[in-house]
Length: 367
Image (cartoon, rainbow, N blue to C red):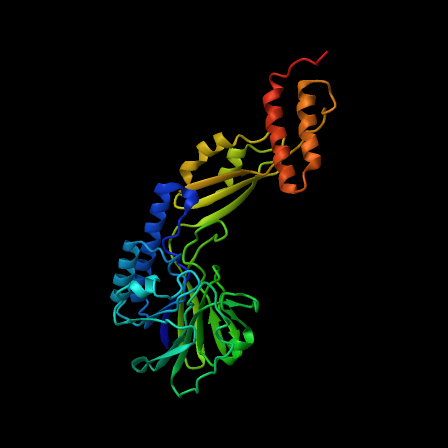
């Protein structure tokens, strides 16, 4: 069995703008360290080859330290490394791949047409292709399966999107995968782990990103360790202990918001980036500033959202001849004119905060 380390979609040097300058720089440094963790895993698992299925870089503006680390880590792996550039790090004269000084053990595919690299020492053939621009045509549409050779393992590494025939990002169909003749197809592009999949006799998978970069990439992430031989393939996800993005919804109906959140946090979150959504019905809007101060030390970064709804009818009294009534009447006019539910929610929240401010100092009714 050939042991393969398969990763994709690192998006090195991502901006992380939401975290601020200092923490975004820290996150980029931590992203780079993922390469070293992968190299260590490859050694520990005695991997025979490593496959990088595109989007290692987030753009063509790679930092110098990132480029140097890729050169060093891939060379130190001391096993064949194959790279299939994707839509973010597509191959071209000015791309990072054209500028890097990579070791003899590293092969970067540079053409959109699928190429073959034989590895006779491992009784295998590696097929692959590159994006040469931000979009590309379906890579398997005109691919003719190679003639199978006894005892030879055939692997294909690609960056592309499965199941969406209209995708401009290297659309791949199940029927094409079934017909491609590969023992394993190592894919990239989709940022969540696929699990092992099968089309005909072909096993294929994508690992997702090895570490989340936003709240659309939540949970534990990792890389794939695949064991492949002619006609046989086993795919396992191996987690990486990086930072996690998580979204947590907490119902604070009839509960103290701080106590409710602390009860819901059932694990150590000090390394993680959290978005906490407060839900339920409350008499008064939760004090987000105070909650943030009380909780922010438990996370690397925290975003707190108030999505509660008022228990009472906040528009009651809008016809009264008072400061409260005038305030509500003006917002009620805006509420009725709003076209989007999100806009109505913002107006309702403004009404709740305004009422809180008025309740302790409402002026007497106007004459």
